[in-house]
Image (cartoon, rainbow, N blue to C red; front, side):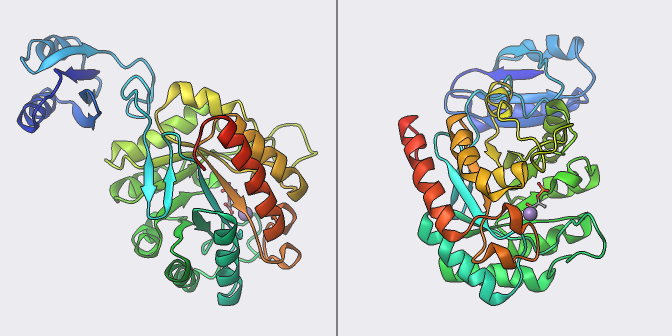
Amino acid sequence: MIVVLKPHATQEMITRIVRRVEALGLKAHVLVGAERTVVAAIGDKRGDAQLELESCDEVEKVLPILAPYKIASRETRREPTVVTAGSLVVGGGTIGVIAGPCSVESEAQIMLAASQVKAAGATALRGGAFKPRTSPYAFQGLKEAGLKLLAAAREATGLAIVTEVMTPHHVDMVAQYADVLQIGARNMQNYHLLQAVGEIRKPVLLKRGPSATIEEFLLAAEYILDQGNTQVMLCERGIRTFETHTRFTLPLATVPYLREKTHLPILVDPSHGTGIASLVPAMSAASIAAGCDGLILEVHPDPSQAVSDGAQTLTPAAFEATMATCRKVAAALGRTM
Ligand code: PEP
Ligand code: MN
């Protein structure tokens, strides 16, 4: 249920309602908005609890949340959630661009990549230190040494760091170096990992699983939100279909559809979504046109030498040209990039 408090509710009023909700055996999530504060009361019990909450002085109305994802739903919060992590701002009309190599390979590579993407206008640096690879024999990442190199690149450029965490055991370690923790597509339904990143207070970029429905995707986000971490970004990165001309199929209708269903910011990853570098510029512009809040793009100083995902990786020059096109599309739609 959504418990809508009367306008200008004080902290004391909010605390009283939270206690009341908890006393009824429900979990309370406070969402403070510009106009109204609402308390999402989550649990199986309804009926009597609804009547009791409706009778409180502080409460204006109590509404059911119809979607299976409760905190992520637009029914709970109408205003867009804006995620901020250092130099990166995503949502509420501002488009963030996270760019960098698939994997952190060496100090020279990540430092050069960071300065190149920054010069072209990226607002955050990506780079995998722990890599989920299809083959156990493929490069698995530089691990903590890679995280240290990312932190050094932030030091040098001021760019926020986005990097993947693959297991709950590494959450504290990755959070020590990163500004945003990425949950990879293969881990979208790793519920213990989702809960572990829900317990920290750093933004999370959640990628859609290649065979997950949008409802499953939003329920995965709900696992993070339910632990109290409100800073969640969603990323469409392509799904598996019968089609083979691209690595995955990138469904851009996800963007306006998610916009209707959730207040969380929506990003698109055209690199993994297509798997082909020549298709990335057009799909980046199309993602902005579809109304996304951000892009995550693979860029390497020399894609032909990349240890992972070289075929889908932009050169710095192609990234610069992509940014120029995307800025025009964003401006045409009245968005800041
Ligand atoms: C990545 O961002 O390099 C990555 C592994 O992405 P995904 O989880 O979407 O495959
Ligand atoms: Mn990759």
